[in-house]
Length: 475
Image (cartoon, rainbow, N blue to C red):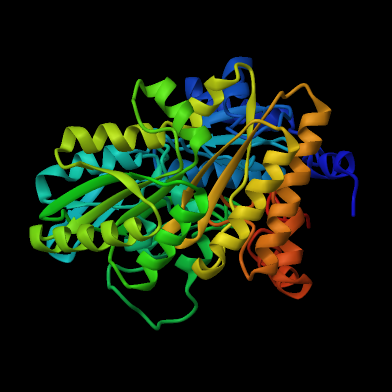
């Protein structure tokens, strides 16, 4: 077993800056003018995310406004063999945006338009910079919505790149199931299309699924066609407190195994409830809690809710409270989505080292309870939230970024948690992606042979290794 300090050192990103010729930056400035910035503040903004890592910023930032401009920047980077890192909303947690090999940050946040809404086919085509909240605002008049909700107001392009999911995945699936087609700029600066608006296809390799989850290492996504869903006729949300985390988890497991089509079921531990109460000025019982939401017809929603309430009662669930108005539901889910920020504010100056394991639902209690015992014994401050309906949960270890000891303890806890999840046939990352932080686990999870196949694909599509290099695995 490695010493915690060795684990912490091994988890730090490998920084190998590649030269950026002044001629490239001069060419970009000549072409894009004020939309190519070398200002320190702009570069630092685009060289950091919500991870705990710190590396030098990119050499320049280009703000693209069209697929053709993305292709131009990509072509120039290819000519000069300089890394290019796509940037959306900057909300990633695993160091995806960090310029570990230097290069150019390509900001697509200004490519934020809805290109077409095909209500009859339940699809929408958008540019990558639009955020998921803005997309749903644009869809309000259609009676449709896009359900994938990772919590942060992430860009749709970033959500594709990391194969995001979130609170609604237990009913509606992840980005993998909800992306129908893409437009992608390759490492050579060519624009290709993958997929169509048809709901299924057997035509050749599934390049759409290859790009979804590739974290910017195989191409730059410039257009996305998504599935949409009718707004449910009735929506009801509820909270229920439990005497223990185990009771809450057992309730979730039985709910899923009985086939109740619950839309969301989120676990919040007592620590997190306390933090959320302080941050959002709520009065929730400071005990382990499930937040649930039911979608369907009025009768269907009532039946689902009654079934879950009966299951919860069997495990000691109490204080079952309903939120039926949109305002009450929004307040409840806003508090849940702000759990990360509530935790950060609970320890001023700290950073959260996040975990993202996911296990088969039947093994959830085994994995979660042992991991809770470990972090409690460590004495490290933490919070715990989970999309427990699909076996995914997140610890946030709240560390002093200047403390090597605390980082070492957090990395040790993370390694134990991931190894436990893998032994239970789970994964190191349910939705955040590999990025930098989980690179060390990929071979253990997928196997050396599978990772070598991934490397072969990377070399074929990006022979100069310029698309977000140093992420997922080292070449």
